[in-house]
Image 1 (cartoon, rainbow, N blue to C red):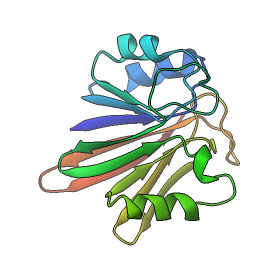
Image 2: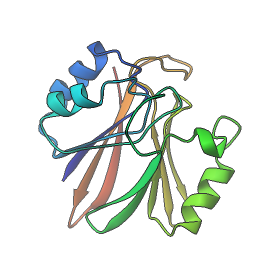
Image 3: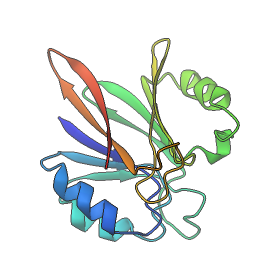
Image 4: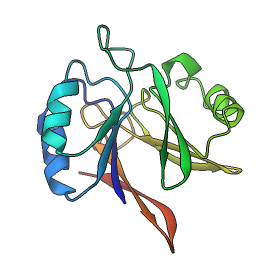
Length: 159
């Protein structure tokens, strides 16, 4: 299974559309918040199932604040991250994820990509497609692939 993991698009379609087209085919899209009203647009443009959570700028969104989904037998905790103070560090988020007995935690909010193993927990942030904050300021996202032989693989991509 091929999953496109994105975050913090903030209502801008240019980079979102580019990545959606560039990475086809994928079977699912995960958006980690701050769509700013683009829930329906994303679902139509993706052409596959979309899982998304509400970010701190999604004021009137019907999306859940957080959720746990399952992909290929792995439990994935999705949150934007702002309620776990991720700007100051990942300790609260990691503690929460471990308490929920998940395999993977995915979050957004900081606009910087993260792929980090914390014991048995994988910590994922795709960065931002619209307003990246890492040193090179390149928009980023993650392609997650599941395979019976290779397990889960994470590919951080920039453009």
